[in-house]
Image (cartoon, rainbow, N blue to C red; front, side, top):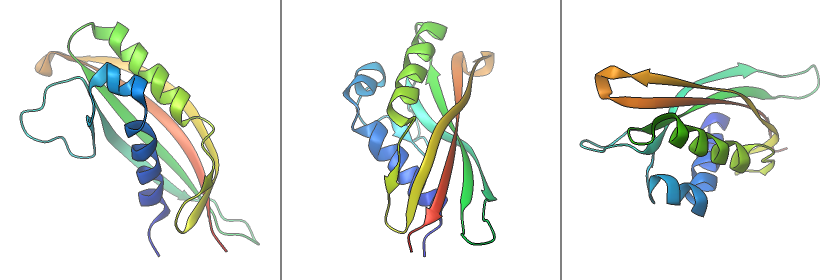
Length: 136
């Protein structure tokens, strides 16, 4: 059985990669788990993830917290706001079956923007909460 977090990450990636509006903002194929060398923003990366047991006495379940990082250099905060808006629109409310698990809740928790002088870039951090159950 695969880890439900890996399945959720796959759904996130597939949903974002298929979105034309995001591709217009960052370019096609610019969503990374591990950024290839010599890539320059804008792009979106998977950030920190946290997985907690959410089981009840009668059913198994897991709560996941995923961060998506939006990186940009030009247009600063304006571009980050636009990217975050698309991430939230595409992902919030996603539900349904994956291979071995079922998403029963997918919500946006919060977003933040930071500056990174070292990289001369802006970083947007969008946090999502996902609840999954195994498919019986």
